[in-house]
Length: 300
Image 1 (tube, rainbow, N blue to C red):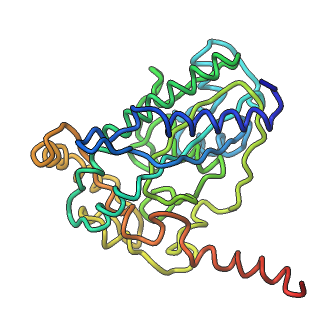
Image 2: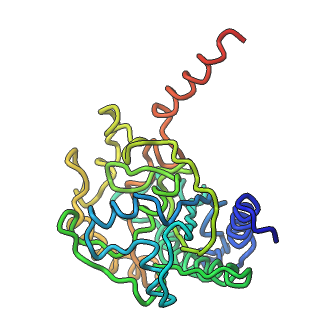
């Protein structure tokens, strides 16, 4: 395999997508044997991206940069520029979104299965990518399944952790944050994210945004706010996301899901469906971009 940046990028993207598409572990484990996730998208960011230092400053000193994760895993120093963060988005399937869109007050069975069994698959995908990269001669670590990963309390944001999949995805050009703190991506907000950090060089994905709320109509245009009404916990308002109310509701679902669906789990995600950003960037955000494109070629 060529070690050029372009070839590495293509190989990594193909490896992620092939595992999602072909692995039998990508399953909701229901009677129908449905997949947990649709086709993923992949992005890349440099370990030297200033955003990672900003995250450490903004979230808390406990947040670990890519270079710190590498040092913790392998016991050696590395220049941040030698590292690449590989991030992916796993979109919910159409069947899961269609069912969940109609839900009120409680998560649907498909959604709860995606939260539990789908995330178990995401963990296997992280391990698969680490193994594939090691096999190709590149050291890699998946922070979320590392023994060094831990929960913390942020002075600015409440409960947090020393690595964030959504923040890595944001840095890697895959989306921006909405009113509910979910990540709005080109394949929507109804998704889960994953990442690995590898000692290799791939050209970073261009971030088509300059603001961390760029894809959210509420923040950019003062419109929408549909996710507020979708939240059964009253955890969303024009002031944003109340993490404590959200967590309290999720704790209640740890009883609801086993009692109603017959497997240990929890979930919610109602704010991720039945909203304009469910399956993509809201049209009102994309419309000005399309108008700008047309205006450039109006004389052709």
